[in-house]
Image 1 (cartoon, helix red, strand yellow):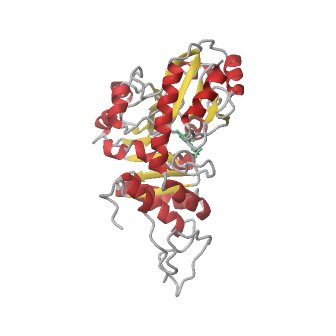
Image 2: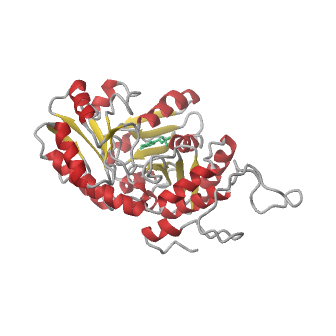
Image 3: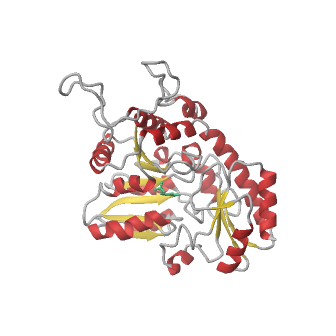
Length: 384
Ligand SMILES: *Cc1c(COP(=O)(O)O)cnc(C)c1O
């Protein structure tokens, strides 16, 4: 089915999936198999071994590509396995520029794994795209951007960064996890590779760990397929099936996450115990205008700090939540609360995290799709 001209909600239901030709099953079967029978040596139906290709994963990869309006989609065993493949496209001596408010696990793989392989990483405040100019040199091969960033929701102007990389042999990769393809499509803004922790909004039900890459560039895609097959961090068919199922409601879920996110942000803004509120949908957000331009809506992620900026104050508040559940991760249908400096961002030295706003009392919310009245009531009682 040609899904290129379809709207998002239609693509989410139909892209990549076709009735099973053998049985008519409307849902893509879980092809729980490691290998495929060959009629003669090298004579097969396009599938040889499930690290290389699997029909359930293949349907998912086509769906992921379609959702990002891209040509090539690749699924990985986790978001970090997807980032791992991108960095393995580089060579010793190459340099990467990234944002200084970065997902903790991404910072960790850059610093503790790939620095030992001779790749150099620069972390900069890219809220003003001009700041990338002074960091670009002849060794720069990749700019790796998260927007909105985790956890203080900084916004980076993807198109403005793309203008500065085009024609210079520098790839622009965007971690699009916080938006999901429903709210932002970086390839259309000039990015070369878009990455997702599928674990979060795309999967959407807190039951799968998975990652994805999408690109329009055949050369990049070939390199990534080689890495995916050679390094082997592929997801299994059962997880691929669960994500295909989750994707069908992605548009609906993101609309509800965004609606609830905005309501929670406004209610926090008005609360006397709350200091800064970081949500790109608020007019007070530093880069609200850029967010409005490159995002279709503002999603369910936000963070805030307390006027009493101590770890203890944050711990007390976090412990009082009843509906928002204390857990790592984000992007599921249920609302979660986390304390970045002690949880997701514990790997980042305090001095560095405080500089980017991850202060001791910072609390991050992943606002789910529950009834907003219940969420607001829980927030009010926790902040009392
Ligand atoms: C969770 C996350 C990752 C890592 O993905 P995993 O699926 O946990 O490996 C990368 N980037 C962002 C923004 C994330 O939230």
